[in-house]
Length: 509
Image 1 (cartoon, one colour):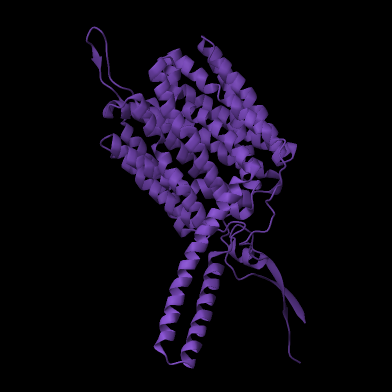
Image 2: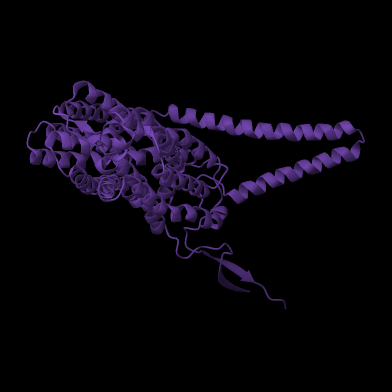
């Protein structure tokens, strides 16, 4: 008897590794946030036309000037994409249990590409608002599913660091969007900014359809599910045939068809009831709820910062290059702060209590520096303190998402990320931009408006401080209801290197 090593029959793309997956997802995430920074930049967002007391008038610029938007309408425009994001995120997360998640990302990015191009062709406030909503629908699939993919494939000792690298693209994308939007809006036209974004995203949308699909931890491969369904249908057909053979009555055949229809209805009801059960499981998890509540308060401030920051800096300190200055601060502090937060948590040992400690401390210190920055009359003192504050505030991205992924069962991770995303937008940056616009219209003082906004970071730190004392369990390695066998996983996951197995060859005497 002889033994030899032969590779498993399942094909594995040689070039597609976990690190390449991280790079692809980082580029896509950055493009998403470049779009958000672009529409907030002075070059694309623009300003209303003004008239002096002497009768001299200047024409408006950008979206606000062309469509004659007040500050409230301008704030609504910044939040419009989140309407689509909020509606579609739970839907995509729920579909991940029946449709391959990687294909869902491809569908979402295709919608994003078309909607972004549509923004460039908009002709009034409502047309661009509808396109921004569709941008949110397209982004929803990626936001819900990318982080679980990264968490699955990251090295065990570097999970938070990998998540930090991914979420580093948020401030980096915003910053690049400020600079990119300012340059395109100044030298070309604000519409070109959206058209170029659509062209850059198109290859990634195509990639989602042509690449071999990936599977998430806690979910059975689509092929296994389809085989199970086919087997059940075959068994049912045999039972129906036997019943018909034993009786010639036509009522038997009618009963069989009625039973099949009722079975399909029961499957749909079971999927819906499981979705409701999953939602309840998240809402009764104290660790998850406290984490998301703190994230909501944090995102309320950061959302308004990202949209109104360049305009506030221009008005308070007369920054002639507010887009470039805020973009530079955000990209440097965002990269360093986000990476530092992830690496520090890995050094502390990645646990949920340690993540809460890091969240509360960095947010509290960051709030002190940002609040103090807006008290200075000197622009350079403001920039110095605000930079340190942003460095600390951005450190939360890795830890907060680590908690979302590890305090729930693996099969709930897409829904956990979706509900987190929905919550931080509904109670965070969706209302914050319009409300800050209303507040500024009422008091007409950007310094006071900025101080009031920044003070909300203190409650966020307090909420996360409570999480330190909650009983928590890391559930990443728990078995899931849809858990697959090791053989199924090795055949379905293209990120793993080709394995070898021993086979025996017998020879006849």
